[in-house]
Length: 438
Image 1 (tube, rainbow, N blue to C red):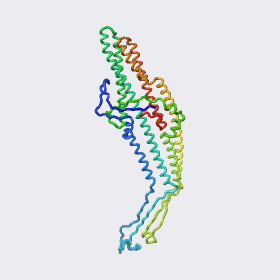
Image 2: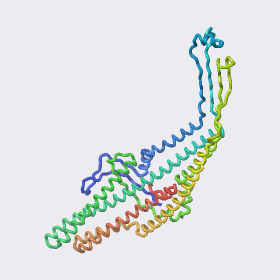
Image 3: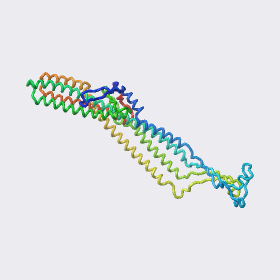
Image 4: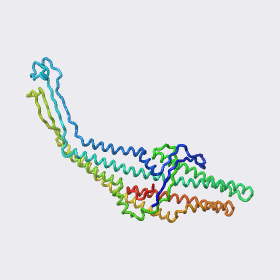
């Protein structure tokens, strides 16, 4: 596999006619690996998703702590009336005072809830699975982001390359029209031939404007992905894509095995099942009520002057045994299993389809040959020269020009599709089987 040296240069296509380009003062020079590093550092949705891991880890910390004890102070009489002092039982005074506390009552209770049936451990385990889910989701999000970025780069580059070809032809046709006007005035060229050349120029101009609109939209997408000012315009120079790698070295079963082992989306789906299973265990443990253990102090409220006692409190599960939530949790496990099987089948089908697509596109590009586009350009130059010298008529020239543009567009489109199919396989397997960004 040949190395790809991809240089990122910023430029701006200006003027409504689309005939010229103007380099902006505000430019940014990056290689594509540097651009991807920029993507990982500055992409705002990615930065937001990374925070989900930190939040999930914070939930683990929270799940480890026990509930706070509850302190209750009740039945406090801040002052006493003379009637109360006459009829109340006198208590011992407090803090060495002669009167403080003699006729005051107070109840203090300190209660701690104790979780039974392993609920505390199960909540912590559930929070730990949520961290793994957040990490797997981030990995899957990153694959989707990188794939979107690379596809946008390929789409932008091949559109830009075809636009360059159209602009060259536009300039060439303009030169031919100027020369043909002289030939027309001398009677060596018919009006029909001159108008046909002018009509072609108008058509090329329209195609150029359409491609410029497409490039501007792609430019906006790249600027948003890289978190760069929208005024920047990107131009990527790509080396020829390798035509060997996936097809000879991996069959469909190999790719699916790699996907089951490495693709974050599949790993995330498995974690969803584990999460649902742990939720089911937690809901089953809710059938056993928690116990509240209390330490009580009572002054002046009972038969003892200063009473200290212990107590417990718990719900009696006569009516609510958590059956509904347990059933719901069991159904969620089945639901996640169905969704996982569907994901596996969809992944297998997608990999099979992409594998066939890569084979077809690689075969097409191999049959076309690496020098085909260069040969086309040389032939176009030759036909233009023949027409200038009147060695061929305008019909022959226009027919070849039409074929040239169509072939150029077709080959560039297939090259772009091949690169995109490779990126899709990389994403579907979770592995860089062929690195396209060196």
